[in-house]
Image 1 (tube, rainbow, N blue to C red):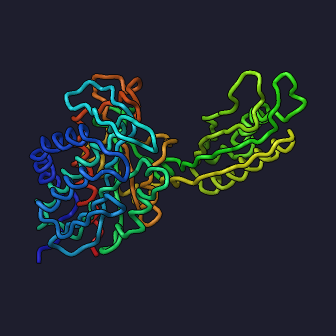
Image 2 (cartoon, helix red, strand yellow; image 1 turned 60 degrees about the vertical axis):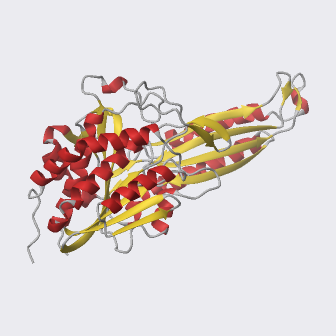
Image 3 (cartoon, rainbow, N blue to C red; image 1 turned 180 degrees about the horizontal axis):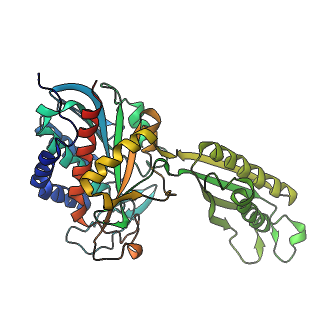
Length: 421
């Protein structure tokens, strides 16, 4: 049996194979973009992915994982460990405003409301790139020392209300087992960087994400006679101000940043009526799980005590969504030379923490993981003014796609070559 290749040995073959599949990656991306599907509804996308993996002769293709997920297993001819690559497939309830020939005109229902559907966060590109990686590596399986597992995940942008899904359900249903994954890699395109640029960070990279709701109950009365009731609008205003002290006065901001934001303030139906109740909604973002728990306690206590002081009652609900996305320090240090070799050292750099959240964090809680960002704004445009991810004007420069195929391929191959079983 031949000995496994070492890192660098795959570079020429990867570059050639990525060039051959480049036009197909673009075609897949445009097809997904024109036919977007929301979380837990990615049936067409999943069918295209599964058919592609089967046509490549994958050793196993598991469908309907976590509702609509697809997990493909590609075993190399040489013995070795198991590495996983992940792409998310779902779109967003956004009506597209980008004028491209493959613009989405899809409409559907999301949480009871009619809405447009758009790949406004680049998951169409993620899926197409990983399909390209599958083709590249399938053509090299005789040289692969170990196994590559391809995880095509639904519902990264959260499942509909009342449903489970996303990375948590993928993990629960065994996507990292049989065979057991030893390390996992993933990427995300972003318009804040130009095409060709790659950003990474060791340790906490993306924030945890939780939402909270506060219901403040007062006593309804005529607005001309406020002393005859308890005004929940005034009390809620004081709660909003009180919550601003959580980060500024209760958190050690020299350790990690955090955010507590109230985004919804609803109460009342008429100018001369003080209502019975006001609803507040907001988000909590942290980069440390301990601080996360502390902030939850502060939000609850401050809301309840301010309400009590004003003669009202506050009921607080906090929902934990995504954990902190934490890049394994050792895996990050190992990965950077591969990225620099493929993309060029001057195009790879450390970035600031990102207050957005990612459920890639749940894979990282189970196995060492590395997640990085890749620019998708054309080099002749100012990335500083580009429409952000989740915008109806989010635009993807398709020139970024080959770099995604090459970096994911190189990370998987290099890792397997450098970590013999």
